[in-house]
Image (cartoon, rainbow, N blue to C red):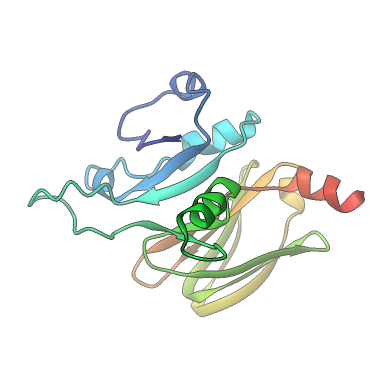
Length: 185
């Protein structure tokens, strides 16, 4: 179950924490963005900092009313073995997807306390997460960068890619403590 458009619904942290069955948060909703309530990353980051294990997704929430933005304004890109429903569902449950309003995330890899991002041409690549601040690379036609993860400690981080048109793609949260524990074994 996902928390649909929490910013548009004015969900508080207490409201969100009461939804124990939720395994995902809609972090961007194109329809709600029309009202400047499309971005729910703040709520999601607080929940992640409190230890909630959540995936994140974007959607356009098209109701197809004439005043709504066009459909297919935000979506998830799933990394599945095939398009078979059971494979797609397994990939979604495992968090093998990213969300986008345009840019593509080709690969995200972690090695030696650094993160490497490969993407479609971008003007900005950000690594943000459970600590204030961000690692940011800006330029023209960026398609790859490697950034340190030290500022995030054993918490979590996430990748945001933004293109020249202001369209964005977001990774799911990357839980660094669980990756460090797995590589130590």
